[in-house]
Length: 400
Image 1 (cartoon, rainbow, N blue to C red):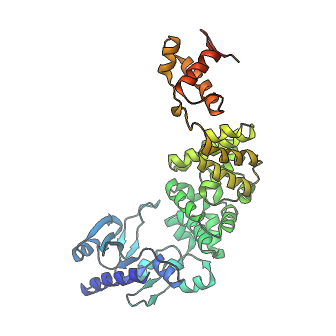
Image 2 (image 1 turned 90 degrees about the vertical axis):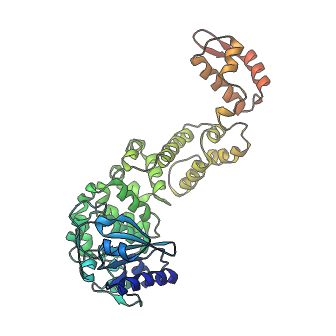
Image 3 (image 1 turned 135 degrees about the horizontal axis):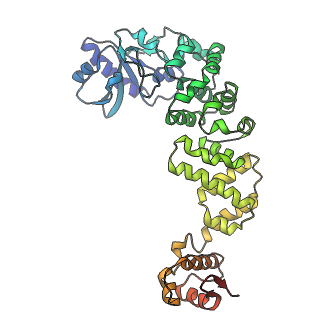
């Protein structure tokens, strides 16, 4: 941790030597004060973006229009941002023009919460005009200045307050919470990607239970894609290890929620995982055999579902799920592609044209091999098909 600050100190000194002031700012200062691990260090300065680029050899433009330049030092990226007195960050709803400032306090007063509005000099002296250290000691989340103003600038801060509540196990100061309730509806204007990112971080916290209660109490849940369709009682009762768990649990409890998964803009892999989990639930409740369950569902889906079933009242046949998981390593085939026969073989065997009958016949063979009634061997399958499968003009019949 100190190594990052030591390298950052060389950046600040270089800015100072060129006539500019600079400070460590934001989450790194908060985490340093709380004696928590610091993974990246941000610096604020009165130098303008072009001036920063002229001072340092290795820079990357990531948000020049918002005053941010990445400076590479010892192969480590440091975000250097010009003091700002107004304007919006990338991704915010309001697209006000960025107003640069020459004063540190003007930059700090536009930040979200007092614990994030501290600065620290290169010699590790705190600059704390909004009593961020006091808020940390009291374990309270409070906005810098008027809550309505901060939340109007970026409504995502309302959800971010709940994320900090979960991750840091802090409470929310009453006037800040009141403003969250009054402005909850404005979250609808925030991009779904930003909301999901905050929710995923929220679900990583040890104070998740209290955070979920606050999402309901502040009515935020009514304005968040997918979650706005979830029954609040079901939401509060669920036990989820991460955000994906929550989506699975709620989709199992209410199948109509599946169609709302697409509203979240999560990855296709995540969407498929939720949909496969819901399909697995139906298979288990319909009494599908453990062997078929083992064949049709990936090990990761089974393991997660077993875990969720233990922690939530999902009315699952846990025996069938555990049996399916134990059967997976010994399955003769893992997909239809593993069969030692294909459509071309069947066409040659029956001397018939290609058609839907091929798929139906392969489905029959797949089932027989899966249940080990036929060896997955080309000749054995052909001989079994000759004896047991009768193909007519309209249908396929299995003869015992």
